[in-house]
Length: 622
Image (cartoon, rainbow, N blue to C red; front, side, top):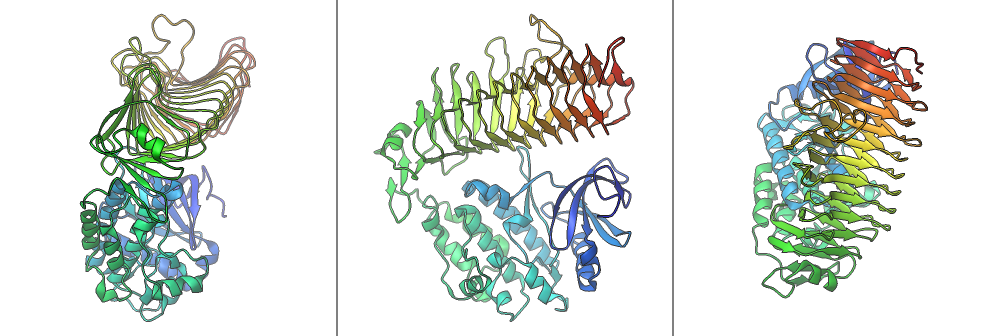
């Protein structure tokens, strides 16, 4: 890697923030734009690929092709050029994940899958109307933005080509494309493909996102080519019994061996898939070679969710009809609880008992609204419980998600609500304690006016790419958004915390002591890693408080606004603070008091009106 292509370095006038990934031809970096206040994805051709004239031509052609396409679901190209002999393209940065990673925990909810399919189909039809073929449609090339309003972005036109273009680059293009999603006519070498080939690949992608597996999943290239060319299209419903029977005919047409038998456009495929889900609901119990599906219907044989859980065997799916279900549930076997409608169609509510308790390693809660009317938890995970909770709305109770006593679990893309007035009822959206180790990824947490995430009593866990809207309640807003204490050592990466303009500096009225801060880290043996987070502060707010002997590592974080960026207080308080950016802070970017002794290295402090690093008079710092 040449000098300048690394965090903090300058390449082609762009300031590099971090490395994002690598592909067959290039590396991709997150970088600050040269002239505008935005991030870009900077794709740089590798030195080895740059020595190949054909690969250089393909790299340049990608920028030319994408620049011709103006569509909200197609990645944007801002600029291209060459620096130190290496070609580069600056593209729009999509802050989120891709569909392939979203499939790590199983098939997507049908509603979400159809939204992704429709947006991708519209993007592909736009490209086809411009006489551009993508030729590598697959889940990894469909990006998803984080946050409550998920946006779909089609990317990686690296082996795309114009319909009129000669086939001089076809051979290497076919090698680079994924055999799992390639059309038969491309694999047998008869053609480099047309719009029907992209439709075939989109059909393979639809099968994958609704079933969690590829239609042809052989590991050898020869076996994959044979399957695409000669084997019948598998049944999606056999792979996922929740899917409607009508969907099999849709996928069979999209994956027809003869291109002329497929849909004429990607939009036709998306419309047919959506129509398949309007078929009548499945019967009460559907049995086949796979797990059973049990329908919960207040007017049917299984009127309650509890009754369905009792009747189900491990591995079964419980499909819940729309309605409000007032019952406390215990998941002590591996089941999937979901609904065929939107996530607000099914509401599960309980009184003072925890609404859903998970004590088994496995199981899924998907697309549900989970409510707690008393002081219990909406979702309680403990004693080895390890569920997947995704795309749910969680609100009320003493806590939204409570993980403790060795509990784990994966919680992703949920909307979790706190309290709007802590003096009436103090709800903590996420509580992790007593040695728990969950993963929370891409959730939206609305804290109200109380603590958003509390990690305590030796807990760990991964908190990745969550968005915390802090202080949107009716009362005062001086509690921390994130509280790490009592020996906790979590990994907190890529999160964004928004602080309201009206927040005061200090503790809530009637609570003694110094300020909590937006992020509060306290107590001896408390540590953990906080990396690549963004904290927005305003007014007199302290962004990060570290005290009482805590020693965390803060690296590559961005702290903006407020009165103090990082306040370190008390003897034995330390930690490593490295390559953070602190901007627009009024009094002190870093303040060290009462003999705290941190290590500060390579931090960027700029555009502040007060001190850079302020060590209180007569005291020592690190």
